[in-house]
Each structure stands twice: as C-alpha cells, then as structure tokens.
Length: 247
Image 1 (cartoon, rainbow, N blue to C red):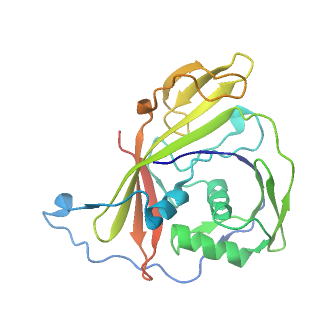
Image 2: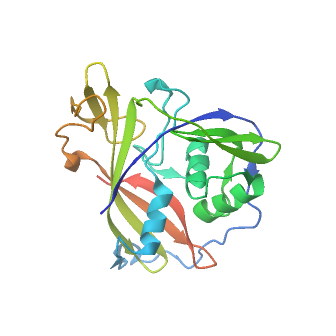
C-alpha cells in the first residue's frame, strides 16, 4: 500500500472558461431490475498499473490562496459526494498538472488531459497556478507558462490518503481509500485531524513529532474510508466520476 502526502497550491483566478469538445457516451444498458443491488465484483490488484494510475487521479491535495488556514479550500475528499460538477475548479486544474511533465502548455493540451481524467463533459477555468513548493504556471492568452522557484516554510495543513482496495464490476472500477487532513499549530506543536477536506468532522487531536514532524501517535484507523468510482470510456480507458465517504 502506498500513502501520499501532498503539497499545496495558491491560485489566482481568471474568468475564461474552457471545456471539452465531443460528447460523452451514456450507458443505457443499466435498465432497472431487481438485481441492481446484487451485482458481482472482482477484486483488483492495488499495485497494478491501471489501479495506480486511477489512484493518481484522486490526489489528497488541499488548495490554498495563502498560508492562512482559513484560505485552504476543499479537495476530492469531502463530507458529501463529489462529482465533476461539484469538484473545486482549483483542484481540477492542479490534478491535471500533476499528471504532466513540468513545462509550458496550451489551453488545448490542458483540456485534453482534463477530458481524459474527468470525462468529456468536464470543464475548467484557466488560471495562474502556484504549485507548492516549486512549480508555477502563469496563464496568459491561452498559454500556461511554466517556471520553477524556491519553496520553503511549513504549511498549517497537510493531507494524507491511503489506497486500501480496488474492485471492478466489468463496466466500472471502484477504489477505496482512507483520508485525513491535519491542521498544525507550529507554536504549540499540536494538531487537529479531520476526516474530510471541508473539515466538517474532527477525528483526533494531539502533539506533533517535533517542529516539522508528522502527527504523533495518530491512530490512522480513525481516518474515514472513501469510495471513488471510475467509468469506462468508449476508447476503453477509465475516467473519474465521483468520490464519497462510506464510513
């Protein structure tokens, strides 16, 4: 199993929206029957290339406009179900760039990757992106100009997630992950742990492992489990549909 802790980003909004050309195929094969809730699934290897690729689509990265804790936004792990329509624009853009090599891109190139990850109806607002700690994309006139810079300092919030299982019913793939986010007080060396990025529910609090350390003695079994659904596209690839808490 792999757990991941991600850095954070600051973003400055522009108002030009982009979307995907083409249409999304709808599944009309799911006519309601009494067997709807009794479908069979097959367990998948969580270390397989496909599962790991889809896992990379659901980064545990909270979004920030500044280092103030109140300026951190939500990611894909929220207290209610997230879909492509409710997913924060900042998070979508960040996740797209996480899949690409750090270089300059056109709007069309970003749009193509967006459709691959979130389906052909997905859209995102172009904006300049500061990806902590050392990547920056300045948006102007349809171009995301890449530059690097020196990062540093401590963030008051960190995210953690862990892939625990995966399964398929033949048409969709489901990933199950545990998630928690931690807000830090670097003066008192304490933390609060939450079970969602909207910080609706606190699951624990305690001491940090030193000034830059991880949460001390945190019981990771307290982290809620989330189910992420990926649908099969017409070309045989899979794209993210939703993520929701299951316990």
